[in-house]
Image (tube, rainbow, N blue to C red):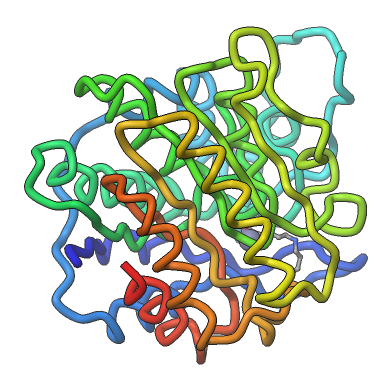
Length: 335
Ligand code: OKP
Ligand code: ZN
């Protein structure tokens, strides 16, 4: 399978995240991508599609913030990564903000998503990796491709970062596909965590179907999205499908949910499938609580591939670094 990876993604080097009331070493390391790239081998580098496809998904004010946040942090006299600590509650009136601390609150939703000197470059090339892997599918030269994106994207919305995500790689690819003439796109999110950014971006859009299987947000991050009654709004009513599952879910509990999402996607009849793939459903993942085994991943990949749609697999999470190469290779082998 054509796979794309760009070493410029490695310039994003988050040091720490706020977790359980204190700082921990950041889970989303550059080694995650290195180990997958080494296991797969033969990856193509990203081409540069520029800012236009990114600006189709993210607002200009957010992109300005993301590009300049670390410099502003330094100007305020701080070292290390920029990170927020004060957030406007939902419904707070729009304000003209200039202090970096206020901007971090305005354009993020958590304290696990630091912005360092290399964050913009890494996120930019992560998005370009998705666009590069998409290109042969749009040209009809391939039926499946893999984008080794990092940092991941599915928690990032039009005007916010969060959940280790800055630019929503899958959403950027979905809009680029539509701009190239694919009218209807389905996004299947099989990361352990709900893809709240992707959901928000297409919540009122009936042309992009978003289906997600994830840990019940009553117990797990991102808490405020991903409940079963979130089904889309307005023109997007019914084009969002959330299947939260309890902690401890293994392959036997997972497959019926997967089949439900695949039936719904088949009924939507998209011209392209994007798969937001996280290997953090793995039993030994250090921050997650499902019980999928390495030997289960080929079955998951094969079931999804059996839809028969042109498919772009976009990397999201997966933090059991020692097993990550094997788990990604196992999932892709199913295709
Ligand atoms: C990003 B993706 C544990 C805290 C976990 C943040 C999870 C972000 C997951 N260090 N909270 O969906 O894999
Ligand atoms: Zn995840």
